Length: 198
Image 1 (tube, one colour):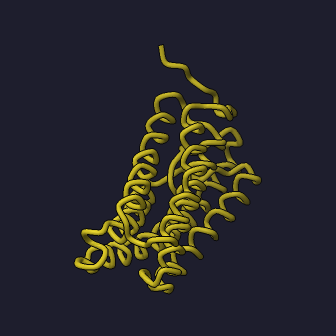
Image 2 (image 1 turned 45 degrees about the horizontal axis):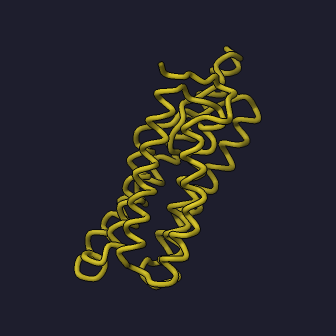
């Protein structure tokens, strides 16, 4: 029998996986700063990427929650932006694409918090999940010893695709937020969006 959780639940299997990801992320960052591309860093990054999909699956199975809708994308940003900044420090990534991604992600997180306080939730888009996958793939291939040096074009191309999707989804969410404010004003009960990446 599957346990279902209400929108206000905090202690859920999905949130437990999210907390696990947050706790392991600093270990990944230290590994990147210490050795750059390496099998241990790649393996840990891969595990964290898989758990990103796992907490989403658990949320759909047990019921999405307000806390999960907020914590899941926050954990994504902590993982991906942290890894990207670490790769900038190591001289692997150029700071410009990482700065574009970081500014959009931080601005979107702040904007989403403001909208939630106003009773407006911004549901996740599939394009935002694709954006996150591209970001994670760029980091993963930059950490994989087989592709870090000999196939720079692979992770570099993915990084710039991620930049494009990051900007595009940011604009999409601004449009969604305007529409959501209108809907929320007409129907105050329409306040909970789906969990997932933004």
